[in-house]
Image (cartoon, rainbow, N blue to C red; front, top):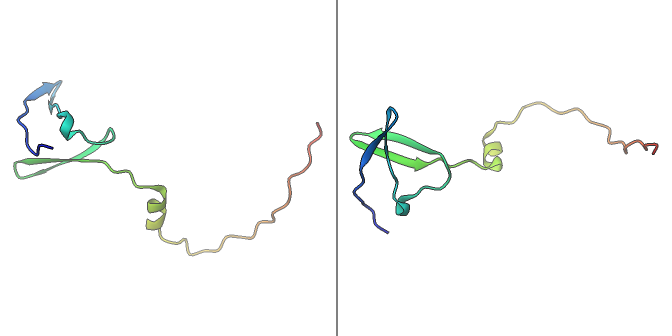
Length: 77
């Protein structure tokens, strides 16, 4: 895979844009862009899994009350 390619910039409304060549396509439909000096860095937005999100939470520090686990009531049909 190439690591460099010449591209043209263009205007899209009031925004400046560029087409990303196929060999540089990013996964997903969102990205993070940041500027470091004269460079623009574009990285795919990586969604955290639910497990990773839950691992990052602190414990509540309180106990949940006991809940009686009764069988469901019969329904008249």
